[in-house]
Length: 200
Image (cartoon, rainbow, N blue to C red; front, side, top):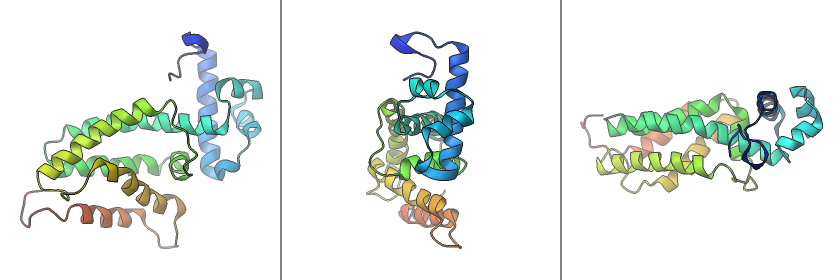
């Protein structure tokens, strides 16, 4: 799915593209502030476009959530590519794991989309998710082979681990909740296979 294409694969006009980006920016901001209770009419008004324009671009709030996630994954693919180029396998894993969460920290709408339940549809995000997963899988496998990560760690664990830390980031379950401490505890557990005195 390309944000630069209109119906039947035709390029979007510049004004239509600007309207689409305004809608996404407004939706991300309102979802981050108020969650899924935000109404489509409010999003259109915040973006200063008509309701018809909103529905021509996004048929539902779910479609908006999916596009927010897709945009974030484009940045995560770049992050994973940079992490994969790091020679030290332990540092490469930390770069992608910590970087993922640091990118999410400034995007509460992305956090909400991932933590909002199993009803999130992924049509239009599969390609981006697959590209990201391919790179992270290689990073994890390299770390396991090097003995710097738990021997039973797989990419299948990655979504649950990052979402666990993200839940602390988003929900703040107690006044003293600190997602970075949660992150440090998780990383320490994952790196227990590092031989004592080994180079990190």
